[in-house]
Length: 115
Image 1 (cartoon, helix red, strand yellow):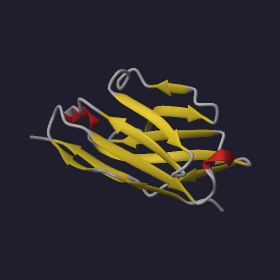
Image 2 (image 1 turned 45 degrees about the vertical axis):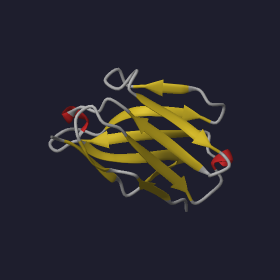
Image 3 (image 1 turned 90 degrees about the vertical axis):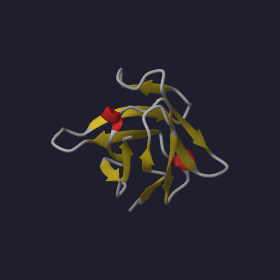
């Protein structure tokens, strides 16, 4: 069983920044792919960023150039740096990984972008 714990959400004004953290209960060196998803009210959950163990990254078009995903082996943390936030970024953000055929999700962290 793997647990994922997200943190770092909050209320921010448009144009502001937040940095989300995802800490797994196992070493991230054992995790090949980690994703960040988000789900806004009334909308389907969507993947916003992915990072592989080798450091390769992938972004949704809606966040490209504004969000950066990274992994810090020393802190056993996957980060999602979010800049130039827009009201449309308001959602619950989740980290996710697939291990041995099982899907693992964190509890989510709320991000609200509003003036």
